[in-house]
Picture 1 (cartoon, rainbow, N blue to C red):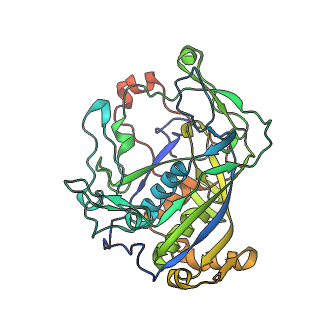
Picture 2 (cartoon, rainbow, N blue to C red):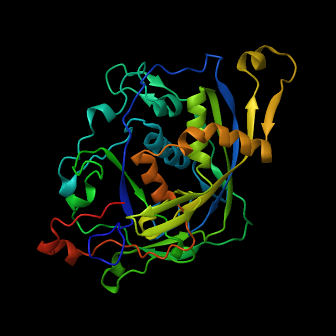
Length: 373
């Protein structure tokens, strides 16, 4: 089971093997008129309490608002989608940790997975989401995917609910927990994902009395809130469009076994926002409409309004199924790990928490790992 061995609880996170970065090549830039262009119209519903911090130095942490409405920034959505695309699509590690265990140097990212640093040799996710070289006279590829803010669709008088959260660690990082599962080494060849916690649809983990004074009071939206956002894409290749649709739509039904003992079934769901280890931020994203725009050369040269190809309902479902098929049939260790981490099973009764400080201080636990996912 995915917990410290011989413990009844589950760690909130797991490391999933990363794919090798392949096929670095020049991107098709915006002046090229030979790719897919369009708009993906989406809805987002949070399945557990959702908190997006407004970053103001207040005693109580309030949910981010813009123009009087709750909002999930497009930058947050883009970060979530890009991280997932890097994992399932074999992209580079565009963001790496600046700090290792106990403030030691971070785990090195393998050279073959390192951030792209040549604008003419970009991995699939850098071609899609953008990249910037890290050297003198650095060049920039602005990317071909843009994501709007997700705007809340609720009534003006709705209120958030207060929750106490404590996210600080114990001041240690247990090295065996951070070994790549497929190599058994602390080699940076894996990515951290957080489990969904369906038992926390209306609440989150309680805080022990001895650390309650250190907790934050956050104001989160209860489960069941609706948001809308759009994803714009320009000049995507077939493979890039397939990856984009997969990371948004995911899979409607997966059937997995964790450690050969626990069976979980249900759709794959995303996680976004703060306090993910406590169960917050699980959400269901649905594509409502896919609009293919006419080729750019037609749009820019025509005096009259050019046609759009709009897909909804059955035609949309068929298009998505065809496009994402390469990922749905992918049985690699990466994809199997992603499915186990992102499945949302309403009947999942596991208890999630971190080991406490005394567990880490116990010398008997020094080499205790997490069991295989």
